[in-house]
Length: 79
Image 1 (tube, rainbow, N blue to C red):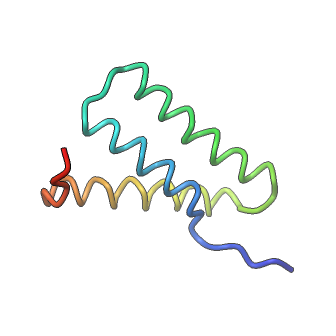
Image 2 (spheres, rainbow, N blue to C red):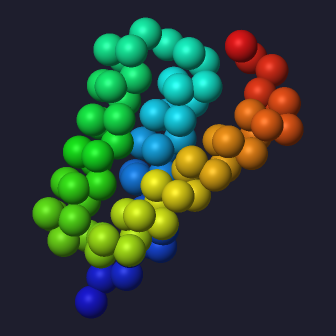
């Protein structure tokens, strides 16, 4: 039996980028692309059987909360 991480780091990374694109106020088309990539990443990980739905949702949640927290705390200074 293979042991994969919880939460999914692929889903977390995709959610982090999608959330960051939102906060930076990028073009709507790029934001939609980011959300599509986020969803596709999660669905692909489930389809490949390397993560469960809970792993993916948890990854999305961690990525969103981490990015939002850093943004609200004004830790992000590279904008």
